[in-house]
Each structure stands twice: as structure tokens, then as C-alpha cells.
View 1 (cartoon, helix red, strand yellow):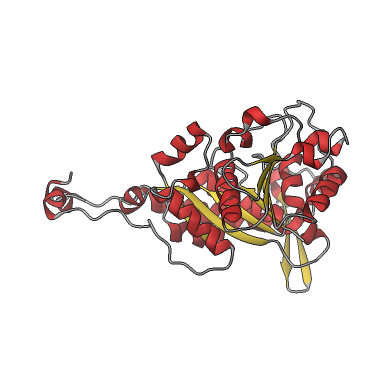
View 2 (cartoon, each protein chain N blue to C red; view 1 turned 180 degrees about the vertical axis):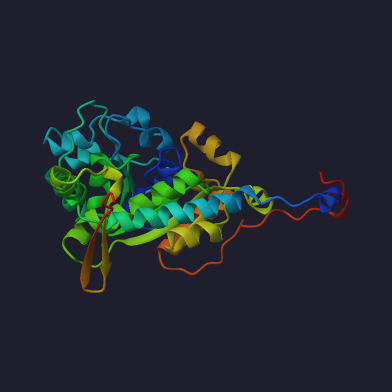
Length: 269
Length: 82
């Protein structure tokens, strides 16, 4: 029985796909058979971030419509064994995904996988709803910025009322906060919400803090999830988040700005 | 923070303004979240009925629903013109 984890945020551009790619890769590196599903129908991008865009033949909608089977559709990652990608369809038909179809695919994947990561589209419409509906756990990706925090709270409300677990009165979806694009220097200067500020407002357990890093764009450029680059803070921070997701207790890193020398302090450079 | 900054007057940081604004709006939106979907429609119909008999403004009516443990309190406030 697989664990279904949705990566969601409400707001766009906060790092959902980057996070799905990194966390999915991390789980597979830890020995779990993992599949990452792109739910963003019409705006497929997970394939680019994972570097397998030229190997897409069939997609999620093809499977739902029985035009292809799972084995034909799943793309095997080149770097990590046990890791698979299910690309989204590029159709413009908004109703291409159906709740029954999604359920059937998830059930079939559940039989052989340990983890199913659902990369949600932005917004709170049908696509986002379907990505979170069957989830056991949710990673809410948030930037330390007002609109992102507000939208995350909206998404938390939807998880608590419109998910399958909420509707059927089961155990609630387990929520995790992942703060991305965190800049400790700006936090220290009082220009950016701190981890504690965001934790206080959203009131859900913290899974990880990913520092703002040039490595993330570089990783996207190359189609290689940033978690592979363990020389970078972002890569290390994602590894920590994966370990916490798997139940380990690890101290948070990269929360403080690098200390300045006495001379720099005096001249304010 | 540089040496010179210690002599300057301290302004409220923009992050604390952001936090305060967020706390207020998020708390407000959370109370609305638990309201049933029919509430806005019901409110409109109530306004229409009252308007049939009394000349009032839509702003003179407030409807709220508060949930505590196992009972909900529905509150309808109408300011009748004096």
C-alpha cells in the first residue's frame, strides 16, 4: 500500500514542482519505490525539471482513457533506480482528468509503489482539488511572503474540508509546512517573515526550510533535481526534509545569516 | 545593522507589518471557512424579505454563524431606521 503525498500551495511559482522532484528523488534514493505524478494538465513541467522531457510518449490522460497502460506511460528515471515519472497531458481540455479515473490509476500504482507524490497545479480549481483529494499527507510549499502564506492557509482549509479523508470522516490528512526561498539575511534585517512567524500563522508542523539558492535555478536549467547536488545548501536542506518525512528527527539548518566580522559590522557593509 | 544605524530612529520592520496583517486576515478568513455554503444566499433572501416591509439598506443587516462545541449560534442583526 503506497503512501500518497500531495505537494500543494495554492499560489503559483513557489516551488511545488521543484519540491516534488527533490522530495520524490530523495525518497527513491532512500530505497523507496516512488512515482511522481504531474497533475498540471495543459501546463506539463515536471518532465523538464526531472530532465526526461524528450522521453514522454504517453501521459496521465492516456492512462485514464485506457489508451495506454501504466508500464508504457511511466518514465523510469535515468539516475535513480526505483524512481518513476508520470507526465501530465498537454491537452487544453480542462475535464480530461476525472475523479474516478484518478482514483483508478492511484489504486493501481498503490499496489507496487511505496510512495506516490502528486505534484499539484496552482490554484484551488479542479486540478488542484484532484491532486489533493486522495492524499494521506500534504506538503504545503510556502514562500515567506504575504500572498503565499495566505494562499497556503486557504489550501489547508480545503485539505481539512474537501479531501477524501475529510469527507469520509477518517483520520485527517497529515500536514507539513515546507518553507522555500528563505533568505536569513533579509529575515535578520526585518524585511522577510521568519520561520517562526510563518509557523505561528499557519500552525502546522515544519518539515523543512529551503534557503534561497542559485543552485535551484541551475538544477532546473540542467533538468537535474537539486537534491542530487549535495554541495549546496538547498540540496542538503531537501535531504533533511526527506529524512524528516521518513520519521527521523533532525535539527534545522541554514536558518541564520552568516556571521559578519567586526569590521564589516562597523562599516555596515 | 551598521554603526551609524544605532543613532537613527528605529522604524517598524516591514516583516512585522506583514505578520500582523496576515494574522488578522487569516483569522478572519478562517471564521468564514466554516460557514455553510448556503449562508450568503440565505442572507440575501432574508434581506429581500425585510426590504419588502421596511425601507433599509443592505448594510444595515449583518448575518453571522458561530460554532461552539456542539451548537451553532445564528445571529441576525438588523438596524431599523429610527
